[in-house]
Image 1 (cartoon, rainbow, N blue to C red):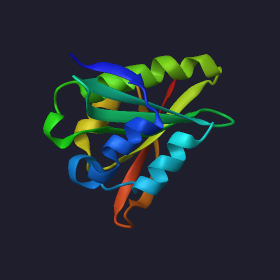
Image 2: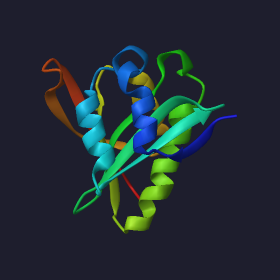
Image 3: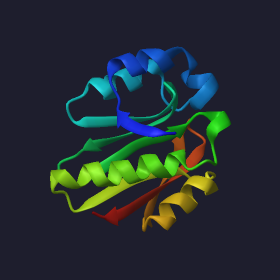
Image 4: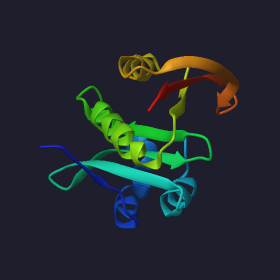
Length: 144
């Protein structure tokens, strides 16, 4: 049974060496570690029998909440883990009194875009060559 919990540095250490092979290569371990340690960031993990299947985070910004990432282990995609993590982020972020929650998603990531659409996120802009200097990002937002 998948449980969503607060992520801590020990969880990060467990996945540090497999970030690129098991998850994605968008962030380096050093960048993710800095995010986890930041007082403005809040991270959660999806676990099943002690195995980390995914993680997600958000940052409390002056005007809104910014989802920094939602990542599922490659072999566990398509099983509702991203949805569970997104539900947790939305729920947890409401306590900060911000009006909106925003994110950037790769324009090619149709599965993620469909997930965000199903939660009421709307496209409000784009960032050219945002991912690895090649792929465009769609900026999406929804009210909290």
